[in-house]
Amino acid sequence: MFDNYDKTISDNLSVLKITALWAFSESALGGILHALTIPFRGLFINAAAVLFISLIALFSKSNKEILKSTFIVIIIKAIVSPHTPLTAYFAVSMQGIIGYLLFLPKNNFRLSALLLGIFTLFFSGIQKIIILTVLFGNTLWNSFNIFIQQISNEFLSLGIHSDVNYGYVLIFLYIALHVAAGIITGFYTGLLPKKVQFYSRQIPEMVLEISEESIPKKDKKGKKKNWIMRPTGIIILSVSLAVIILSYVSPSLKNNVALEIIIMLIRSILLTIIWYFLLAPFVKKLFQKYLLGKKIFYSQEIDLIINMFPQFRKIVAYCWKSSSTKTGLKRLHYFFSTSFYYLLLYK
Image (cartoon, rainbow, N blue to C red; front, side, top):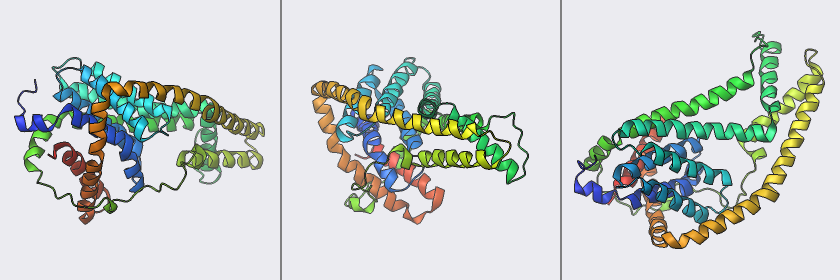
């Protein structure tokens, strides 16, 4: 099916190199995007996973290469980013398994890529909703519902109807955003065979003497923020406190609303303590021990991939500097597109 690629592209785009780019995306790209203060970093990283899994399917002789690459990426993620949460390992595993299943039929690359984009980004969206619901319970979404209704009716005079649960509307919109991103990513991925051939003739030879200092670096001194200090945590706490106050000043709200939210916050704090300080360290230690035990089977590939990372960082730095002539969304589009194809096709 893919024999129409000329030998130069096939030699340059080995499965090992694509796996290396996927591992780099999972292990280092998040830190780079954080340093560049680019929003929706998780969405971009999941979209990148769709591209790389699809390329592995495109250039591999067997679909089992997807599963092998997934396992290598997980091992490298554990080595390079040892503080990665267990949910991230689970997400990468699901991406690889779904990719393996969807690309079993080799006769419809575009459809498989589209479905992979939709499933991967949908799972990314639903995963966070599930975690928040487990952590806070349905009280969280009821709190958002009360907050929107009360603010709109008492302060904005919008007269929002009380029979609509706006907490669930927020869930729908959040997941819909991820599904839309999945459709766009999947559609774009389906065009990769033609785009790879086109860009292989367009990309010039790069000058990579550029220093890595050209790209901002994540503050290594700062401790990793827990959920309370992240944007999601700040929004949840702000809404919770606002609803507690409203329950005492608004006659239309019962006072037990405040009690329910206080119980919700106490519950979430207790669950966080149990998970992060008791269960997660134990499970993570066993998981990483298992991964390190399997590392010996892929030691050569892992060493080669990790040795590519400094070069990848230089290419990303080069692309970020070359995008400085543009601003706003145009700069982001130029940066992401050139980074992707330069990383993919450099010799």
